[in-house]
Length: 405
Image (cartoon, rainbow, N blue to C red; front, side, top):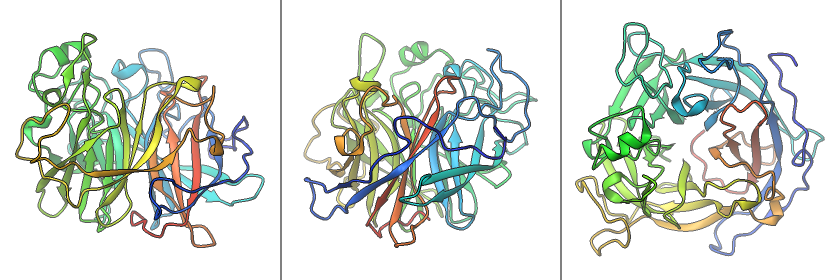
């Protein structure tokens, strides 16, 4: 396979009949049509030219691990953000982002095609490479501190904004991948004692983001004036610690950061179940967003994979509250409203079943179709597994509310 061209993968999703889905929850939700899929082979290499091996013997330039997507109408490129690398932070993976050319042609033999155009490595303000290693809590002369990139959006100022799950913080990078700007979030979102070991980190803190469950999601607001991050699960103090050292609860914090001032507002997103997690958020209207909420099951065991439409307009700002309840909220806290937008397990899409990936993580509005409809792109995270391809699913929507282009 050529390095610059990735052919559309075969498999059970290769040819799917277009179907139309009308929501039974809200009459104003537009009709959706499934366009098709694209498969990125797990053995493909990126364009970094980095031929070194990681500590586990795997290649550093393996293409995959996509935790987020964003599309730029200015460059007409699709960004696929790789996370901290294989083995759950155990290796020193140099953090990076992949930029693709994308073509979507409904009704053709290959409705979705991608071509890798560029690989960009992230460096800090001093030019030191960022590493995905959970042990790199402090920067050294050679390497910047640890980074777990989980969300990405192209800002109106030409920067690529990335949410760091280790933080949680939001960092702005230029087109060459060098850090230009950083937003530090409030102290109640941070752990006081960081540790490479997740269990030790959870047990060693009474507040802050749960280990490996930080700012998983990032959006650019409809008016392009704010970045909006969503925590994957409740903060330690906002949830309940289980016997398995996991933080459970329904109430997750949305963190809105004003780009011009850095001012921060926070709202409560209530998941359908304490066992769920949030994978992504994308702007949908002036105060509306789509949230990708899912369980952690795979294959036919997957029971919840949905896009939830939310509105923050009437929600209570809880930025001044260091702690909120894990269950029912008091009358003085109004969460964001929610309604169902899309169920990935609906039989209409023919995606459910034994081949359903565990991690559906990327979400963005893509290029417009010739008929004026928007496209909605969804990606899976293959964890850099050599036998597990990365998938891009493409839907068409009649909505004209997309503003993240």
